[in-house]
Image (cartoon, rainbow, N blue to C red; front, top):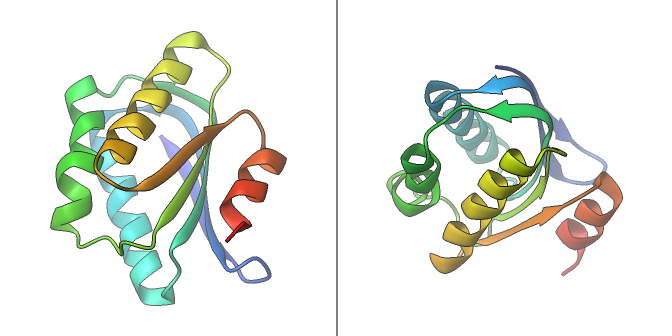
Length: 125
């Protein structure tokens, strides 16, 4: 999987845009890169664009990110993550699953169909 990871200084958010096939290894590596950037920039709002991916990562790996890795990586409790979903049913379901597990663990994570809706939620107090 390829991705772009940037800080949007005007909005004070991290933008993470993913392309291609998302494997379990990509999920781990991408998460680690986002955490490192968030910590170095002290930014806790993230816009994750998953609209151009297919997901081959296992359900267990997807479950482990919010269930285990968020705690292990000492994710800031104020973190807010807006996910823009892909358009295929499988990817929508996998993204919704990630968001549901995250919310069940107390994290502010929501899914959206487009950037405008995602930013409205992400930037709201």
